Amino acid sequence: AELGFHALFLVPFLSLNPFAGKNMIPAVSIWALRWFLFRIMMGAGLIKIKGGREWKDLTAMYSFYETQPCPNPFSKHFH
Image 1: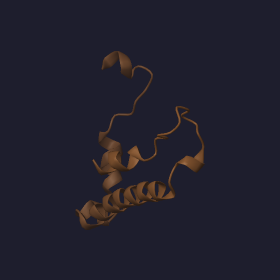
Image 2: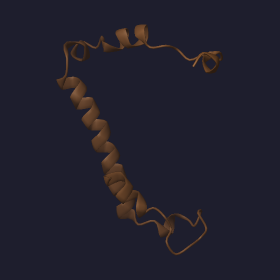
Image 3: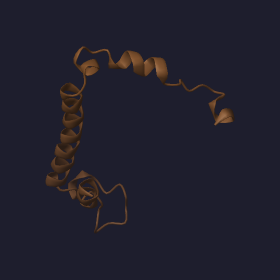
């Protein structure tokens, strides 16, 4: 909901041209979206650091790569 609210201010209201230029987008909207994305990325990282043992000793990706399927050209036929 928060991201959608901030994204509303990126739409050029007074112009039907979708490429109206950077001058029509308020700088506050750009910084609000950047702050939102920073909070999401930082929060995801902090949860992993505070989380389980495998994130602290940096071995979580070992089991991820062993258990996740790798997509290939034939994947669409088997799904």
